Image (tube, rainbow, N blue to C red; front, side):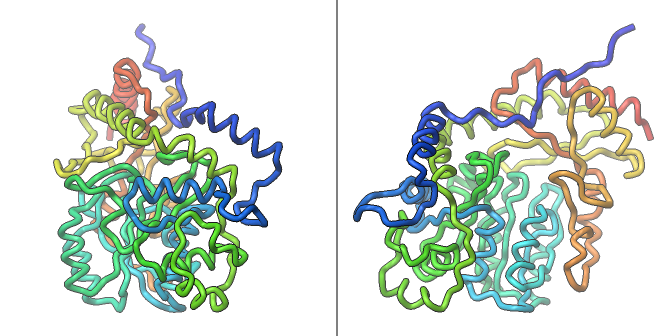
Length: 401
């Protein structure tokens, strides 16, 4: 009797930190200077400031501010844009919990926009919700690396006088129609959490060309009035205008995190290429599997495939836990966005019960009920992908509706 396929590698294991970064961390630990701010010689550039300059150059924005998470980056951005208690903020219904968490942290209320079949924001729903709400900010998540038609999004922002904030936690290095993700919005926020395209365990970045936003983010993140020690520094007059009126919320990035990121940034484009190669190998291996629908990609989207999504059809949601369990028994960890209660790194808008006036979003519900997700390492090979595809087929066969 033929044994069922089994995956022997951990798809969720991040790549190792480059040796140069490890050596620099050891040097920092010996010095003990782990905070990015302090009494340092004039003109000396800290590791975090150097990373901010390098990141701003990479992304093509005037200012980059390194903080302790993408969730904090989103919160700092919203406050810098003047979001106040009770304000409405438009955002994807399909995103992860730190995004509505940042809105709630800012004292505001999320207004969710429906999800299109390609997992991006539904443009008709966005048009309607922008007209019906009082929101002046669109917090757009490029969730799981899926980028909406950015020309159409920008047109709607102009139509409804919306400020666009991009959540690029999953799209660092990705492009829409040749333009880098994170350069469309007024502000962009990035993540350097362990499973993102740059890995410092935890971390985030705010990028913008707006001097006032940059000054407010620096002050609120907690610079202890060492503003000049940032890598990208707004004019002194702009900082002076906000520094005493902005609370210090202690959301800085540490020197250790910055060293890890500096070691990885030069290789980011190559890492993105490897991720997408792995993603496409897996897509080709899974394509045509009965009971699975793959997510369509727009040819204008140059994505970074660090995760892989598919929809289990036409099974009822009640049968999907058996499918997930059958995959897990063969070494393949599959996440499911249809869970009634959040688990691990998955969640859905209906579980964020701190949101007032919960919305009914039937289109998003239909998609999330069958939506599954697999992490993609940079070094998947054809055999790995064939094994994953065989496990998915075997698990589907064992959980027929």
